[in-house]
Each structure stands twice: as C-alpha cells, then as structure tokens.
Image (cartoon, rainbow, N blue to C red; front, side):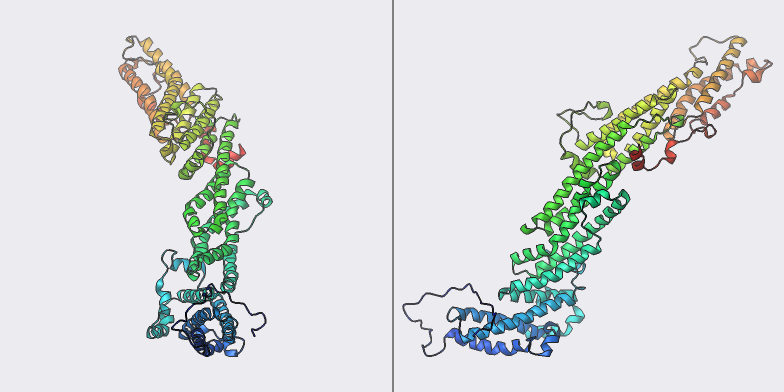
Length: 628
C-alpha cells in the first residue's frame, strides 16, 4: 500500500489497445513482463544510491551535501533518478498499482526530497557567487558558457579529471549554475517542477528585493511626492537614475541570465519564474518617474531632472524590452512606457510655464550702462542647457499635439515656417522662445530715458543671445541662417547707438566735402563746439558697458574711425594756425592722441558711478526664473 499522502503519478503515455495476435516478444503469462523485469533491475540499482542520501534516515545524509561531497556520485544520482522515472513510465501502462510501482514511487519521493535539499543548499550557500552582478558580468543571455555542461559528459575518466581540478580551474558561480540546471532538469522531467520553482522563487526574489532596497528604491505614494520639498526630491531623482542603470544592467539582467540558464528546459517555467521574482521590484522602480510627473508642480527649474529620467528610460529601453520580453512581464514594459509619456507631458508643460515666466516678467529695473539683463542670462542659460537634451526633446515635441498657429516672423527663424517646408518642431519651439525673450527685451529697452542707451542695451543683449546660440547645441537646432540674420540686427542696433550717441560730436567736425574753414574765428568755433560735444558725449557714454569683447571692439572701431580720423585731420590742418591764440589750452583741449585714449577707455563701465555688469552676480537661472 502506498504511504499516506503519497503523490499520485500522472503520465502522458496512453495504454496501448489489446492486440489480436500475441507479440513475438511477449513473455508467458506465468512469468514477469518485460516492463516488470526492467523495473526490478532499475529498482535494485536505484535503491542503494537513493536511500544512502535519504535525509530522514541517516545523519550523514542530513548534514552532508551530495554535490559538494562527491560530484561523480552526484552525477550518478541524477542518472539513477532519470532511469527510475523512465522505467516507471513503462510500468504505469501495465500495472500502475503494483508493488514495484509503489516501491518506485517511494524511492522517487526520497530522491526528490534529496534534490530539493541540494537545490536549496546550492542557492543559499552560493548567494555571493550567484549575485546578479557576478552572473551578468560573466555571461550573456545570447552566449552562456557551455563549460558548465561539460562537467557532466558521459566519459567517467573525463569527469574524474574535471572533478580533481574543478575548484582550482573553474569559477564557483559557473559550477553552481551547472548544478542548479542539472537538478532543475531532473525535477521538472520527473514531475516536481512546482517544488523546484517554490525554492528558487523564494530565495532569488529575496535577493532581488534586497538589491532594490540597497539601491535606495522606495515605493512612494502620491502624497509623499507632493509634500516633498524640491531639494529632497532632487536627491531622490539622482538616486533613482543610478538605481535604474544598476537594476537594468546588473540586477534584472543577471537574474534573467540565471533563470534562463537554470530552467533552459522549459520556456513556460522560465517565464513564470523570472516574472515572479522581478515584477514587484521592477514596477516600484519604473513607477517613480510617473509618480514624479503627476504629483510635482511643472516649473522650469524641474524640467532638467524630468529630462534626465526620460533619457535614462529611453537609453535603457532596448535592455528593458529584451529582459522583460515575456508576455507575463507586459505590465513592466507598460509601466516604463507610461512613465515616458508622463515625463513628456511634464516637459511640455514646463516649457509652456517657462514661456509664461518670460511673458509675465514685469520688472522695470534697467541694467546700468545698457548691460546684460538678468532675464537674458537666465533664459539663455536655460535654453542652452535644454539644447543638450535635443535628441529627447525632439521626440517629446514631435509627439506633442500641434500648437495653435502663431505669427512667427521669418527673420527671427532663419527658415521658413510654411507648411510645405516646415522646420522640425524643436527648431520652431526654440526659435519661438528666443523670440519671446527678445520681444520682452524690446519692452525693457523703452525704460531707458536715453534712446542711444536703449539701442546699446538691445545690441548687448542680442549679442549675448547670439553668442549663447553659437557656442551651444542651439546652433544645430535653429541653424546658421538664424545666426546670420541676428548678426545683422546686432550691427543695426550698434549703428543706431552710434548715431544717437555720437553723431552730434561727429557733426561738429568738417568733412572733406565741407566748405573750407579759412578764418581763425571759424577754426576756434569748431574746436570749442567739438570740446563741448565730446565732453558731454564722453561723460554720458563713459557709464556704458559692452561686455562682449568683439562687440566692444567693433563699436570702438566704428566710433573711433569717424571721430578720431576727422579730428586728427582738422587738428593737423589748423593747430598751427591757432598757435598765437592766448588761451590756446582752453580752445584746443584735446590732442588726437587724447581723443583716442578717451575712446579706448569706453564701454568698460564707470565703477565709480555705480554701474556694473548685472550678469556678473546673477543667481542661478532656475532660481531667478522661479523668483521672477
């Protein structure tokens, strides 16, 4: 009689129909059948091997590991179990309740208990050697070392040779993987897959969960994210970025490699096992960006961290897609895609908020000397950093709903905005945001009482914008034509400044086309007018600043070419005629060299007058954008 609680064996082999004629290979009714004879021999060979390692009968078997004690005997044990199972399949079709079958069932259960114990011991004792990092760095899913299988070939001499040197030559993790695979194959083929999986899932899931915990990944609720201050949340995001890379490249990848190898004999078991082990940790990890995007205020200073997370998932998507390729893991990939979608929504909303911040800036503060406005510095710093994410931003903006058509002056783009030859969405968006900034600067330029200073302010700020575009990835987004057209605008602003700021000085001096100056009185009058006009202009313009070296040199050269050349010609022609003038120093106050020195000192700002370069002490762009 079978022992109480004994598993009933179910086999796929069907009982053959009775034959009308006796087989020439059949035995006489009075003797045992061929299957029974095979079973008797198999049982006689199997019983001493299996009972020796019954953990319930001997202390030796209870405290000793078969695979660690004698690898040759371990291989023989597996072969014995396999032969026993085959013999049982033959016998079950003839007499499933025979004494031989009951004896075989008892031996099979004993063998399975042993293998369960061995499977558990190998997994437990080799946690360090089977950690995901070790597995992922030594193997790949497409090419797993075949050396582990070589330990169990059919040549006893080869096996003994391997056994003698195995711990000296081969890697412990490779040996452990081979042992696990051998046991798993045996248990699954013998109908004990459930017991095998239970042990594997419990131990390996604890390793994955521990790995997730050590990476600092936590499950946050919506209220946790909503209440968290930005500095703390930013630290969480930085930690998450590191965690995602390690989890995908090492933790999940290593577990997939190990699972694929150990359960190579069954696709369905590999799938259910891997999904069970990794699903919870993977979902917690990949849900964080969605939680962030849905429960954080969409403001410009947060956009870069959102893009960092978007980039991280995008960059690792091929690995995520490959590692979680099972149908049962579809929720994990779905979560990754959902996080991408929510992050993209966050970025688009933050860009809209950035535009709104510029439009709503109502400060009437003027920059001393027509220098660079803080809004210019902050906005261009923001856009230039944003351009570093151009690949991801292109995808985000390309997938966005088409915005309402805005009248975009082609001169601000450098490309046509027609439907027939529309520029990429990212190019249009960046050019539009710069246009919004420039329009706001036009408004701020009107706050200067001196119109010449307004044009210098526009020239300075547009030069800053152009330089930022030219020296960042914005150059590749909005193009050379945009730069060329805005270079022309800078020259126009500078020319207007020169005309309004210095034309009254230039007009005091005769040109070669002017009527001849032939009397001392006229000469004296011209010198006096020049002195007065130059003094007034220099006093007013000495507070001006031009931070950009090239623009400063260009303006100086243009102003100097007109004033210095005309004055030197006039001075050279008439200085001697004024030699007899009593108050010569009052009339001829400047030598040409003096005029040149005065002009060369311009546009550095008069510190004593209180002017300074506003951008020199500007806070960080995100902080300024937030506060304004």
